[in-house]
Image (cartoon, rainbow, N blue to C red; front, top):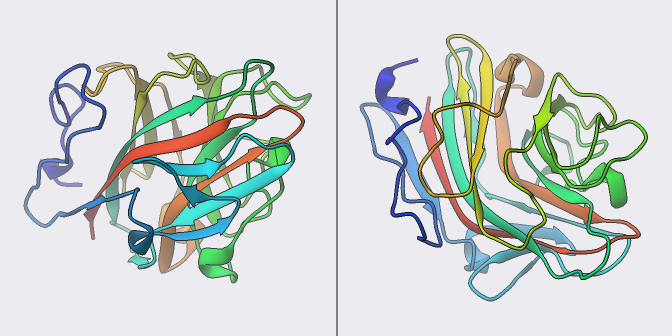
Length: 246
């Protein structure tokens, strides 16, 4: 992978307190797209997902629901394709137990942009296959290592993970947080950074080895899913940028 995708410190930075992750800096051969998550024409929504106030609400504060939102254009994948995705998110609304969380994914499910999994612990991506998924899990179910975790998994297998670590920020504290998901096609490494400011952390949160093209196929939709079970919260995406290195 060319260095155009950038390193951690300073690559995708903004002013601390900005509500949104700043657009990615372009590099040779990289296609950068910033999605307006408050514009329904830029996303395909499924299930309970809706456009909120200047944000994408993957779920409202309602029990036993799931929602999804996808960029309508497929991304071609090859053995060397790389990505650097950045977004900001906020989980809020419930004064009681919160859950269950949301996920970012590449998927090539036959259902296309209508692909949606189960509510509750399935985080809306269970059974979406083929897929590569990064989950932001609030609740500690019996199959989880604990609450408030970032995990990497494949093919909608929400009870197992190929990479897992505690989140460095409290996911459900109602504040805006930031995530960077980088896939290096040359090394087949998927890495996730999560922080409380728009400056990308220098220390990674979790990583795993996975072959994106071999797992998902020759193309993929990119998007998010989320779900609530017996606990509720609004799973909101506030900004979303995709750096694509074919």
